[in-house]
Image (cartoon, rainbow, N blue to C red; front, side, top):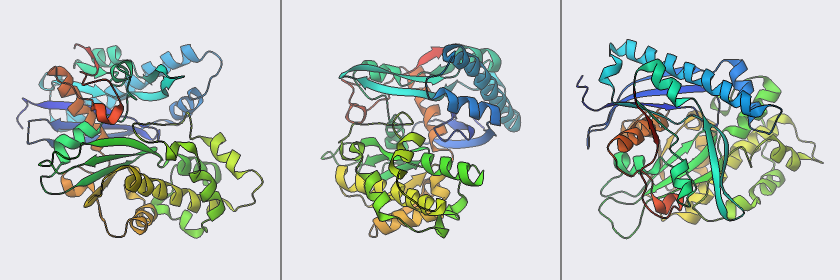
Length: 374
């Protein structure tokens, strides 16, 4: 393979399942995923990451030690991918590493807030002998933006169509929407925002009750009954009425949020699972209709794209819209976000901006990311 435009993207999202690593050829107009690798998180690291999402004793030291452990995992995944492709580190221009989000509070009391993705980028560069680009979100936040979502610029570059209005919907731990107008249409602009929880609440619920990491194809949820009263209470959260730009995470939608809505109820666990699945589909569909112009096509990615019950619920909410996986556009549903951070790394290395102010709310275009040279 030609190696002039090779980049690696690393993504570990709010689902906390593991590390997605993607090798891409980022040649302009011919972006292509060349190879992929997944490395699951060991149970102790996953547990430690969950603990860090809330304030705890000695959390500063624990976060830094965990950042080192994550970087070693990232490096292991990169080495495996390179070995499989018989490539040397010198043949890769850079790694785009998102890191693991621990806190995301972009605006606090109307002022600039912060975001924290851990993962020691300096150590990763040292271990892989490849330049690493990380900390993509902070510059956008410094410019008054949400720091998220960042992938819509990638979606625009790779997935936009001259004659079709599209939406790319990533259903990971959090669900986010990118609206892509026709590339020949100057009337509308790209939009992107988090619609709300994706798999996060569903995964936590099934972990608690079945000791499984996720509900494969929504099989367990399908045995339950939708509780309309619970669904109504969940959808009344003010986040869903707030207009974009907006982003969210475990800081808002967590176990405590769900349990507060379950108090004084006597629902069966599988009824809650069914309602959570419908909740994710309903919030995505409502956000798409409320905040985006009409679309011709919807393409799904992320782990939720493999949940057939969730996909069918979304099709029921949007009966006149074509809904397909991003595989139909040439990038598998599991690899879109990792591929996006490879693309973002290329933008940084070429001194090009990669935020979209209309999406994040930043004051203008910014070159994102901090560079750690090999």
